[in-house]
Length: 399
Image 1 (tube, rainbow, N blue to C red):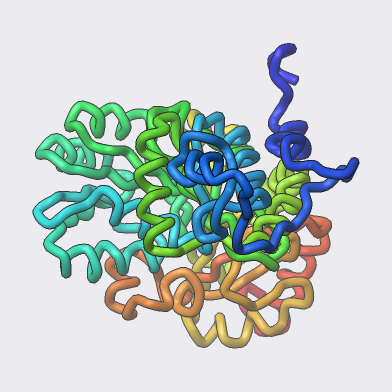
Image 2 (cartoon, rainbow, N blue to C red):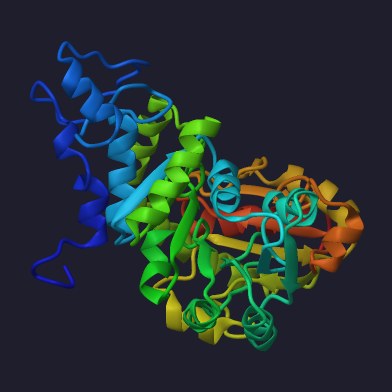
C-alpha cells in the first residue's frame, strides 16, 4: 500500500464496488438478467423511478450487476460517479452527443482511434459541430486552438495505434481556461498506469472491452468523473438512446478486472522487452513505444504514467506485402481486431484500429500501411520474442 489508510489499486481491483451486491453469502457478484424490478409499494416505486431513492426499475436504465461494474471502475479511477455503455464507442459517442450542439467547437488530436476519428470527420460536422484537429504532440497548437474557444477538448493518450503521448495536465489547464470540458480516452493506459482525473481531466473514458475485461469475451464502455452532474447528463442521454451494458457482460468485466493490476504490469514488461528487441531488427523501420527513450514523448509519458502499457506498434520494410507474410508465421499471437487480452494480438491498422479510414486518411495521421499493432499478452516475454524471431526469419525480414 502507498497510503496506510487507502488500499492499493491491486487490492481495489479485487474488492472495490462488490460487497453491496453480494447476496445469500455469495462471494461473487451475481448476474441479474431481470429486465424489470417490481414494487408492491406504489410510493416507493415512484421514489425509485424519479431517482429520489436507490433502486432499479428497468434494465435499460440500471441493473445491479452493471452498477457493481460501474462502482469498481469509479474506485479504480478515483472518481465520484460513473455510467456504463454497451461498447467503448457508445461511451465515446454518447459523451460527445450529450454536450455538443450545432455551432459548438471541438479541439482534438489527429491520432484518435479510427471510430472516434469518423465521429469527428463525418458525424459531428453533419450536425454543424466544428472540429479542429491538431498535430498530436504539438502542445503549442493544442493550447492555441483551445484558447480560441471550444466546448470540448478531446484527448486520447496513448493513441491507437502509434502510442503517441499528450501532456494531459498542460492541456487540461488550457481547456479549463477556455471553459471547455476536458475528455480523455484512457483505454490504452488503464487506471494502473494513468489517472487523467488527477491530471485535470473532467471525464475519463474506457473501452472496457479491452484491458479492463482482459479476456476478449465481453463488450462494454464506461465514463467516469468527479462531477456527478456531468455523469448524470451522460447517463440520461444513454438511458433514452439505449446503449445499455448487458448484465452478463458486466459480470465478465467484473471478473476480468480482479486481475487487472497483475495483467497490465506483466503486459507492460513484455511490451518493453519486445519493443527493445524490435529496435534491433534490420527489417523494422520504426518502433512506436513510449517506454523507449527515443520515443518523442518519452519524457511526458514518464512524468504522467506509472507504466508505459502493453501496446506497441512497428513498421516493416516491404509494407503490406511483408505484413501479409509475416503475421501468419506467428505461433503465439491472434491475428484479430482486438487488444488488451491475455493473449498477444497482432494486426495492421488497415484492418484493426483504422479500417474505417482510407489509405490517404491513414497516411495523413502518420500511420504507414506496413504498420503492425501489437497488444502484448501475459505469455512469457522470451517466448513471444522467440516467436517474432522465427517469424522474421521465415519471411527473411531483417535476416
